[in-house]
Image 1 (cartoon, rainbow, N blue to C red):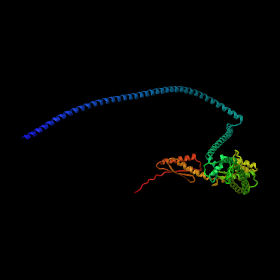
Image 2 (cartoon, rainbow, N blue to C red; image 1 turned 90 degrees about the vertical axis):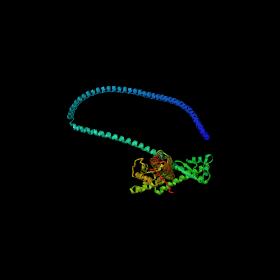
Image 3 (cartoon, rainbow, N blue to C red; image 1 turned 90 degrees about the horizontal axis):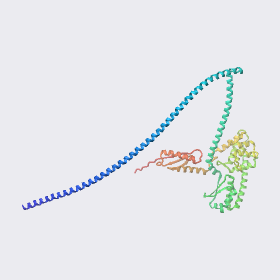
Image 4 (cartoon, one colour; image 1 turned 135 degrees about the vertical axis):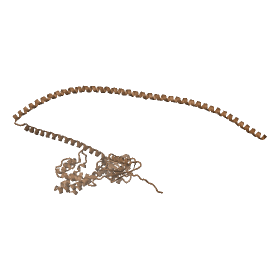
Length: 513
């Protein structure tokens, strides 16, 4: 019993302790909750005040923006109102001006109507008087009005025809003048495009040497040797970094040949100094002059031409060292002479005269001086000077239509000159210029963006351009071909036309493993 009592007492004491503890904890939690609620209320109040302030600021800002918009609209409305008032004023002024002009027009119309009435009245009177005068004139002249009219029409037709012919002649003269100007312009543009290549082709010779050590000896101490060479020959000698070559530049092919032969002899001999240079150049000139005369004589003997003046013989020999469009002038003249003889014989003319004219037709290209005349007229003057027959002189002067032809030999020479010049391979380009043009074509295409490879084929008549498919689209390929063609047209000189083909392909590659 005591044990039970003790247990019961212990349990009761525990329960009471737990109740007391619960009550203590509840009191503590309530105080904490109160403090948390208080803090939350304070924070809420502060947030509320802050939001109210932000709302007021936003409201003020919106109000200010709204006032600005309203003010701007009012200002624009005022400006438009002013503009409308001005336009209205201008319209009113125009209306007033229109009304004033309308009154003037009405007055003018009335005046014109009055004048027309007066004119009609006077016209009737004039017609009546004119009819009376015509009747009187018919009685006096014995001509009827129809006869007189036909006579007058005939006279007017003749006068009109004369005036029309004069007018047509003026128009034709003006057209010829303009055509001549346009033709000269085209020729000048063509000369500008081909002048550089033509000058390089016809004014430069290359002297090959075994080693570059000789260049120093040719130049000499302080440039004495090269100055002596240039002074003696009249040729510019260019010694640069070009391997195993010295460039001789001069428009006169005879001088270039003298310089080339003199250099060859000096380099072979090994003795190069100013005194020796003058001696060698003098000997070379004499030997080349003898060779020119001998070439002229041999050519005349081969063609069966006799009695040619020594100066003309010399000019024929000089043709050997002159080229025209890559064609040797002496070979061209021989071709023309033989063709002229054959054609003249077929036509029943004198073959010897035709052959003589054919040989001499280009002597105006090789005079020792350079007069300002076309080579055809210059050749004619030289032929007249040295006693050639009038038919020969006319054929020389007329082979480029510089003067009028007066015999049958002249058109033969003109035709044979054209035949020789147009012979395939006659006027061929030099290999260097051809190769350079091919390289220029390819490098020009490679400069464009997206181009990987470029090949010039068909002797430079076609350019194949390969582009990257990811960088160049189909549309861009079309544009690229056009751009390349335009650049070729503006920057390059070429015969005929160049076809540009742009190739674009897409390769899809995969591997099966």
